[in-house]
Each structure stands twice: as structure tokens, then as C-alpha cells.
Image 1: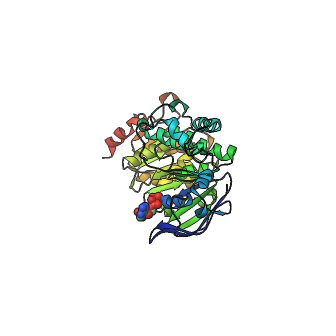
Image 2 (image 1 turned 180 degrees about the vertical axis):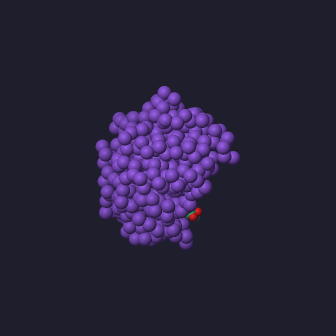
Image 3 (image 1 turned 60 degrees about the vertical axis):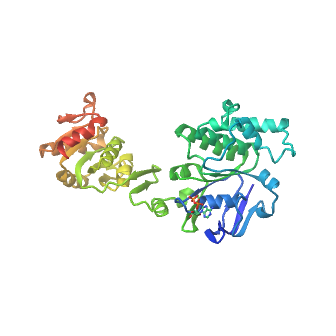
Length: 394
Ligand code: ADP
């Protein structure tokens, strides 16, 4: 199923929410719509689904004008899953609700036949809710209801499905399963999926195309690898403090506080320390890191001062000199327990130098794994770190 729009404007009465929408969704594509709250994602999706009339322009389904289609025909072409709690009759079972998805195919009495049953069970299996078949929908959790709504849409047996923030009520496990289901539906059944979502990392991992919506217009549309970069995300959401790192597909809070701590990181051991210090409002500088280290990505995204060298290279004299400057300004040193190899031995010398300068050293290194020649005044686990830091910095 192919969906295309031509000079589409969407909105309510005299209020235009988004105009100049020219987008295309091909068979089997997963298209994600991203944009801040109130940017018009729901309004656009409702218009694409035929639930809201376009203010102007046209939506085509396989070359056919969607507005000219009968409701029944439309229901065999596309299914919709909307967010938010729909009013659900108290005594409606999951089986009955999913069976209602077969309405475009049943007669006026709604009689379910063998093929309908097949499709209903197939839909229940896709979403892994067969065990809930006899339960009342109103008594399910929000997450379970959301899965059941997807099963109902799948029972409709359409080639296009439109979903408005479908993963918002789902916990981590259910969200992962839900995303996998959508991806398999697109890959194995050639289903076209158009959905709105908030998670930029999910868009990067699951969508073939993303559409960025803001200020009444489509800001960009294309493969996420091409258009979703740090700058685009920052502009889209306008978050001053929220920083995105595309390499790790992650957001971090920025840390603008004065660097009173020198953290020696590496191999990912710095990351929990950085987040902890940022959460508690402590400024820090860190190094010496390799630019391919996850610690480098996390610290850089936070906007703190990072002394770094190119991937897999020896730490050179220039980096050591820069690190010594940062170290001199710090009140304490934290050794994150980084793994030690031939290319980062200079970090041990820096720690030794810091201790020689009289800086208190807190180490997260396990005693049995002590690669550090100096004896830390304080050795602790990451969960006790802030208590130790408070001893030196209020
Ligand atoms: P999003 O899904 O991106 O959060 P919406 O499509 O829900 O955004 O809303 C876009 C704009 O349309 C908002 O300004 C919202 O207040 C407005 N809006 C939403 N529903 C209606 C409605 N029924 N009538 C008039 N304006 C509406």
C-alpha cells in the first residue's frame, strides 16, 4: 500500500496546523513522525487516516483520493491506533474487541466466519496477547490495552497501519516487543507503518524514513541517518539542557558547573560517574580519553571539558600538558577504575601527579584489581561516591 499527499494542509476549521505537506510512504516502509508537543503530529495522522478532512490538498492511497473512498473500503485499506484511553464498554472482552476489527468484512449482523477467526487469532498471536483473550479490556493495564488495540488493528488485515504514539504506555520489555512486531509486520507482511513517536533513538533504530514537524511545516523528511543529527534534534525540540549524541543514540543533561573534580575515565567506567556528578550538580573535567571511547561521547555531550586523543593512539605530551592544567584546577580526583593498557598508562602518571599535588583521590577501583601505584585515600563503590565527594566539596 502506498500513501502520498499533495499540497496537504491539515487543521481544524479556520486553524491551519501544518501546511504544504508532500510526503510519500511506500509499501513496507516504517515512517516515523517526530516533533514537539502540539506541533500537529496527531492532526496529521488523523488526516492521513481519513478521520479528519484535509483543509486543502489531497491524500492518495494507491493513487486513489482517500476522501472519495467509502468508509468500508477505507477500513480494508488502513487501520488506525490512537493514543489515550478510548472509552471501552465495561463488559467487552479482548476477543470481542479484536473481533470488532473484522467489521469491514462481516455482514450487517457482524457474523464472524472461519476466515475471520483465523485473522483474529493471527492478530492475537502477532501481539502476544492470546492469554488475555477472555479478559475484560476495561480491566487490563494501559500497556496491555495498547497491545490489544494493535491486535484489533491487525485483525482488520490492512496493508497500512497508522499509529499515534503507540509505545507511550509500554514498559521497556513490552516496548521492545512492540517495536519488533512493527518491524516484522513491515518486513514479513509488507505492511506500511506510519507512526508518531517521541524517542529519537527509536526513530534511528526502527524507521526507514522520518518526518520532522515543527512551526506549521514539515522541516525535513528522509532517512534518519541523513537528517537526524545533533543540531536537527536540538532545533526540533529546542531543549537548552537536553543534548543528544547520535553515535550512542542517547540524550544527556548538560553540566555547566565549574569543574571542581578531575575524573580519570576510560572504557565506559567514567559514564556512571559523569551522570552521578551531573545529577548532583557537581562540575567536572575528564580525561585523558580516546575519542572512540563511550566515556568521550557521554562527557562531550554533557558539554564538560574533555582532554582526548585520537582513537587507539598513544597519549601524547600535549594531551598530558592539557590534562595537568585541568587537574591543577580540580579540588579532588576520581579514579573511575578504568582498564589499563599500553596506550593509556599516562593516566596513572596523572593520578600520581595529582596526589603529589595534595589532591584527595577517591577510587572506584577494586582492590584486587589495583593497577594504580598510589594508595587511594578513599576507595568506594559508585553508590557511595557522592557521600565521599561531599566530604571534600559541599
Ligand atoms: P501533537 O500531536 O504534535 O502534540 P496535535 O496535532 O495534537 O499536536 O495539536 C496540534 C495543534 O492543534 C495544537 O495547537 C492543538 O491545540 C490543536 N488542536 C488539537 N485538537 C484540536 C481540535 N479538536 N480543535 C482545534 N484545535 C485542536
